[in-house]
Image (cartoon, rainbow, N blue to C red; front, side, top):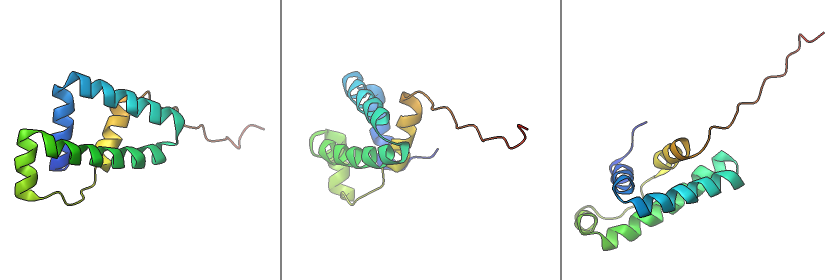
Length: 102
């Protein structure tokens, strides 16, 4: 899976900040338990973009990048899906009903 530069920056940051990573792991797991995966990814994508915007106001390296490049809306969908894969238990696939059970 390929991440855009904003997603990669966010992922790298979460990997280096244990408290932030734990917060997001819990958020991802709770969301995954309560919604279908399509809805979870969309919700997490919005939350991750808001988080990226907020961090771009406070973290030195991110602030300079935001000033230089701007903060136009960028998809965080790939990152949301990656975090779901990494931090949640895989859901079992539904078995196809067999028509040869006669």
